[in-house]
Length: 324
Image 1 (tube, rainbow, N blue to C red):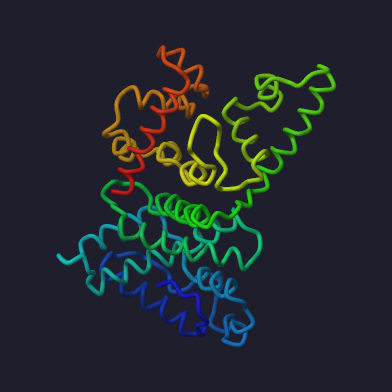
Image 2: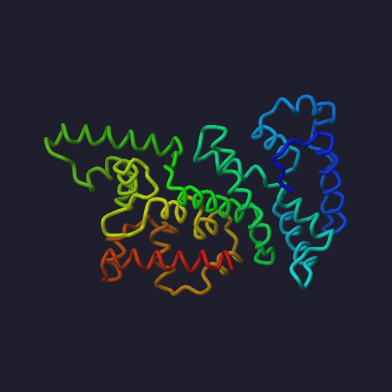
């Protein structure tokens, strides 16, 4: 499975071939022995020793062919079929489990690299991400019909963000967030000069081309120095770290929208009320324009805070369903 310590490249190639062979016997998956163009001579042990820990991890991850959606489903079902009464796996099912994990190692790196830039920091976060990947493989239910990689990435990101939150460290935001913050500062200066007063939230959001809620999130990053312990706003006990755990990774609604999988949509919507589903639809802009909390509150005749509570309750239900 996942290895962060040095391993001879020849052994890595052999283990990959053995796992593919074992998994093929149980799941009937047509995996090639090697990725196109790669040979043993291109991965000799001397070159392996020159890599740092992160380089070795990424080199190992590159040895595994990415799975097609159908292959992920077949592996997941094979793992489920090979699970013993005590929860352990048969040797063949364990090979499928290892193949599912190893073929998605890249997801761990990509999730960590979005929040850190230094190699040692990325590797540190990847330890938490690896736990999330293995947990996702254990919990994955292929009978629901959606891709393992989608579910796994969400789980990996949640694990990494919880690790950051528990340690109280600041989040290193992706470049696009920093660009949006720079744009916000520029528009604030321009509007202040033009209006000879501080611009309102409505004027700023119009200038940015975003919703009021998006503007509030950007200001939270700006005002609190990106501390994970900082509250999102004065009306809530929710911290930025907790919000990132919930919001930075794909939400269940985003997964459903991206996969366009009817079975997954039915699964996610099970257990939430019609009002909760409608709030999520309006907030996410599904088949409509994105709505603010105030706009939805006016539609239902309730306060902005009540809409926020309904949204949070619905999202919690969906997350619990994904993890159960």
